[in-house]
Length: 239
Image 1 (cartoon, rainbow, N blue to C red):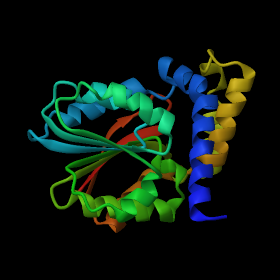
Image 2 (image 1 turned 135 degrees about the horizontal axis):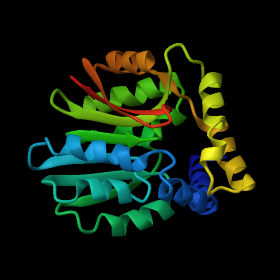
Image 3 (image 1 turned 30 degrees about the horizontal axis):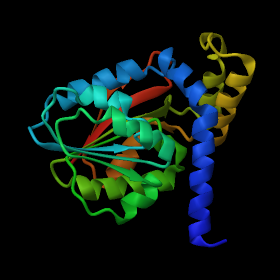
Image 4 (image 1 turned 45 degrees about the vertical axis):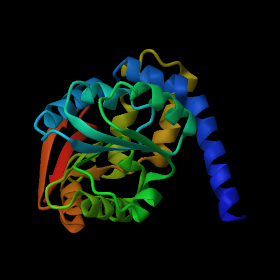
């Protein structure tokens, strides 16, 4: 299979996944099951301290609706969003239209894109997507982000986080115990979501996130928010 063919297959698969899972994703968001509202409120508080004209890199931006809301009224100088799903980016285009700055949307796999990217940014944000990578690929991605952020930039993540000494299997058991909390989901929707989580998610402990930050070249990590379920946490990394 050629590289072009692989790219086309990935794009087509992404489009199908976006269409098939969109209703499920909207239920997750609309019912705030993963505490998106609180996480993005924490993000907005952190962004309010930024100097005017900052560049914001939105990694795995999806439809960018939450990021656009968090950035509304702030002195952003440039917005860059990247996502693998073209249908999501089509929606993102409308959602970021009112931002008072130049905006760019990039189509592709963020891990691959960061490898070649040379554009400096002030803030990089990734929410509930970095955990799809195993430890070593997280490390590679965070090293590229450290390079783009320079000495003054900040990486912000909202990601799956294990308890101290908790295994991936232990985190999954806690995820599974949420079934009754997802009351808007029917059995098939819960099965599809949980199959995705069990197959794709690689949570890390707080200490592992700290190690990733240190090995990537970040000197400081701070926790700013923990979800009500305790499954997700928001961290910042800086030099």
